[in-house]
Image 1 (cartoon, rainbow, N blue to C red):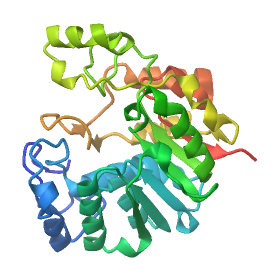
Image 2: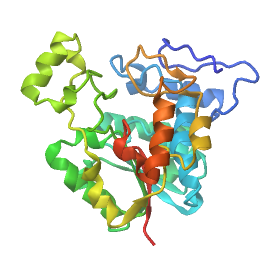
Image 3: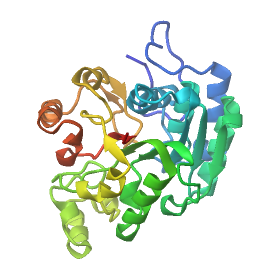
Image 4: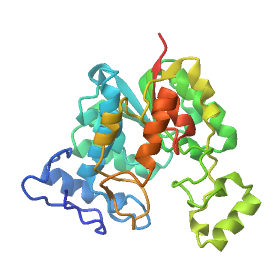
Length: 307
């Protein structure tokens, strides 16, 4: 198992021989240079400050890029990484052989940091950078081969969901990759993790979170119902029955993996799914096939253009 120090600040992590298995490798000087980027180094309150860079890229490659590459020749395909943050998905895509990546991010400092990272890992010439909201991206129809929206749609607000999804469907030419919590599920890990909290109006949700000592985690996100994805259906069809994976074996082999999301205190190494999660996913996939996301905790899915 990789020896990343879970509680350490962002820095280069040395590994012993044999500990690189499955990891997206960067040379030592590059890792150290990335760790010195001011916004990453000094971003004390960020959930990203203690990330292991190589393992974060490895997570993005294994969860999103590899499943996508089974359907799309990424060597000839462009990818738009919406709400890209520091660009880890886009960079994993490019390092795996992707043709071009467009990083879209509203936070100007993060976008500048992503541009610096791109330069230091040698992919800047295959990147474009846009400071836009998802619903306002003004690219041409079919202007991008793959549109990726990872844990983004829950942040656009109730009134922005329809416009965002219609824009995704309009811009994407070949595929859409998305993850976002499923409002139907009674507990959402992305937020307070309090049962049924996200079903309550704000006037009741905040006191509930406060009483449970989780007020700081209540960000009043608006989570999507499965049918909110309807704007995608006219042009695309879901093809992944196990989250972003096509088969049970692929889903199972994703574990163990590093988890680049969550609060700084989270134990980032995941040896196995949470209790019952694997069995539930297998059951839903067998019952609903590529529509299994409709009853899963997350609407994670891979969509391809209809023939």
